[in-house]
Figure (cartoon, helix red, strand yellow):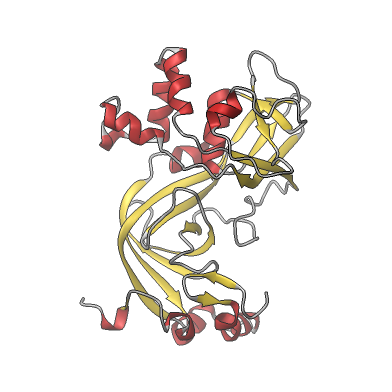
Length: 293
């Protein structure tokens, strides 16, 4: 990257040059981190989980797979999800595959996935852009309605509600989130995760999506919490719903098992970001050395 390339927060690529050179030298990683990085306390926050779904689909629509996954239009499109579902993009040749309606919605939330076609081919789809509409969590709507208790909220609980609801009620709930994601076909290596915002494959349980307004992409992030924690992770992705200094979204992998782990994850955490001194000269927050125990 150019030395002045912004990575997030107040960090630019030049701040990390010495650290990257040390990493390339193959010295012990722990020694490099302890000697060259400063721990900054980002305070209390929340960690959720995401994964790369594997879902069934077809090249053409049919009753079982009626919903298209769209490529990004050649010109910016800012219409809502409801407008797209009503056919605003029809006839433009943007359909990459057709899948189940609920599967499509959750694929938009995850941002990437693998579509298994009838002939056995696997289509890896990754994030290519969005319609610039606000993201509205439908789980929050269900909590506000009293349909699902807050403590029971998960991806699995939302899916169960959608399956049990009358079709029009389910359709209306999905349309309540105006945000819409466009996809692109990506090369598939079955043993690697999707490409995150940093431009590298995500690693299960070690890659974390962050708010790059506060955390630079590429930075090591130490997360204290309960389930599956503490853990040292790497900031390698971002997400439309990931906002705030202590907000993170942990990548769990791909397939059903990863989905079962990621879906219920929603826990309080304390986040620490490891930065070279030059990157935090004007960054907000309190270095760990100055924080109260």
